[in-house]
Image (cartoon, rainbow, N blue to C red; front, side):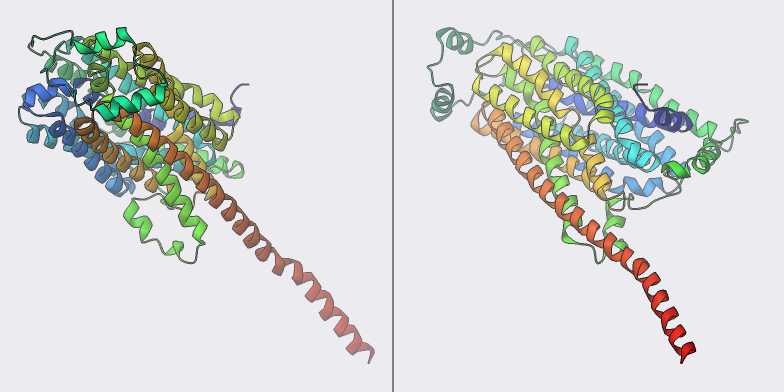
Length: 516
């Protein structure tokens, strides 16, 4: 079979929980992707500048980071975990519904902050639960989990695109200095073509039109409603709703029975019973078991987090500003056509994560990480070189999404496997990824505002190269930690080997005494 029978059996025994965690990640993806294509319409709605509207990204990502950090508190019991998922998914629908009435950038930032808090809680609970349930078999299920982020993020821009205004506010970033033009020509090693100049000198639309983007938000609110209902149904099945008893055996009891039959296969206890090192990041830092561990143990956490800080930062910045870059000089792509870029990016991420499900079963995470990181660097560099080609912008967006798609689940599986699921890798990586999206979106937005749209791609190349360099350092500390574990295992086996020798020597001494 293409997939191991044991993996299929393990999934069937935990299917209800797994499907629920996958569904709430659809809400996560739906909420994370809509800001990119609608940013100029929201800028008009709030009558703000690009620099001011960028702080809406910051508010969402900052509270996503807070939600990721505190999400572990809600996994202590099954009731608290599912309740947190239900409330978080419901909050996302409510936020979608009220966004059209946020006519001030501060009010919009507060709404995005609340949605970010809900997204962070979803992110941490879903990742921790799957990693703890499946452990060494979690790579396949994590890829599927993050496929649903891509699926939700694909749906969001597609819904928004028909309702985007064609002209925006006429407030594009046209700060293209002579130094940037000179740098472009230096990269291309050729003068800028005449037809590209003529295309970029006259914006295609001058008149403003009224935006109808509010309908897109209301549609997304309705589409998301089945997700909290699915979580509520799982709570009903688990007999966690006092007023609605269920005759169906609790899924928890089925899991406990499954664990008894899988102890010889390395199966583990469900997440609601085993906290291990996968609590929130604060409890991880206070874990007494971390004392006396080697430097390599902590450096794997730090460097793995930094890699995701860079790569998830690229995902957030690219999804957030590729639309703004496309409608600005030198591209001047029409708004409704540029709106498809975010959809293409998230469609590529969705397809990449779907493709990574069988690949993660066939290949080690380290091989997939090397391939994806190298591919991301080459793609962004090619986008930088062919900056005047609108066709290659669409092609490069697709390739960029494919290469970036599976880096997070692969890194999560890779670091947890190195640490034998004893550290805090899940909490650290989720938190670091959230920090990367938060910081990079603000940084790139400010660079576009001050230096021009071309800095969007330049920042992408720099960030991707830094991520690859940090990953090389992670490989070095992986080898160091492996040597440490090998030495520890040798020391632990020495007393067992010396015991027979001691018994043999005591027997010989006893014989000498008897003979004397």
